[in-house]
Length: 139
Image (cartoon, rainbow, N blue to C red; front, side, top):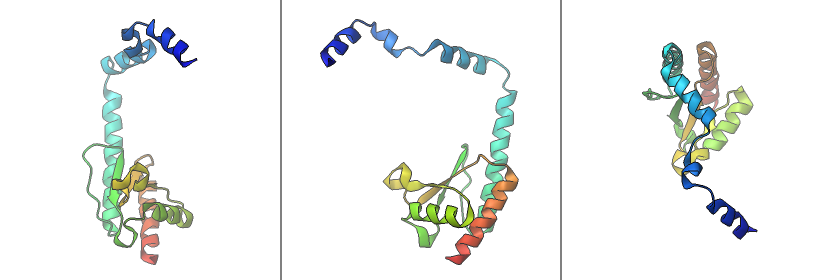
């Protein structure tokens, strides 16, 4: 069976295997050649969210560096939780309802980190930081 699939595949022009689907190409052309106002608006939204969350975390004593350009914030786990990102995230969501991504899910080097996604409005991000503060004070 495999040899039959390989035989049929070899009949396809190699360039066809590397081409993007035309719908994706047309969408990319429209996005890049159209108005960029939405891009500026989106960048501003994520910058505001980033600034508010980083400030809120720093205010509760969790020192986090402000990333340059991303929709995520990677934060090194506080001392009692380092090297246990899964346990930290599991307990945090169980006790506070705040869900973060454990760094361990991104490989061994991520173990000492958690990832915040900047997908919520600023008020919710501030509220999440206040709930995290209470959680950290208990430990």
